[in-house]
Image (cartoon, rainbow, N blue to C red; front, side, top):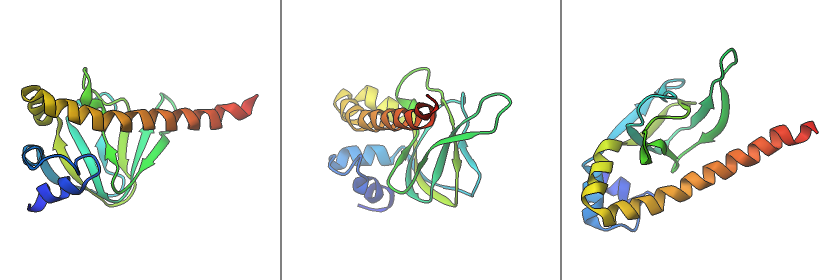
Length: 153
C-alpha cells in the first residue's frame, strides 16, 4: 500500500478493514495542514470533512453570545475530529481550532457517506467504529461538566 492507503490502514479506526475498503476510503481522502489558530470548521457549518489527526492538537470550542470561546476538549495525534458527518442534518455543533501546527488526513464526508450507502456492510463497519468515539466524547464532556458545576453546591 502507498501513501494515504497506508496511513488509513494504520489508523485505529481502519486498521483491520480489508484492502478494498481502505482503497475506497482513500479515494475520499487528502492531506490537510492547519496553522496555529486556524479553524478546521465552525459551529453550524456543513459537516463535510472528517479529520484523522497525524500531528498537532485541535481544540474543540463552544461560543455563547457575549462570551469568549470555551475549550471543552483538546484532541491530538491519532484522534478523530468531526463526528457530526454521521447523522442529519450534517452540521457542526461546535468550532474546531488548530492549537498548534496540525497535520491530518481529511476524509470527504459526503464521499464516505455515499460509499456507505452503496455498500451497507461497509456502512455498518464505519458506524461501529465511529459510535464508540462519539460515546467517549459525550462521557468526557459529562465528566468535565460535573467537575465544573459539581463544586458549586
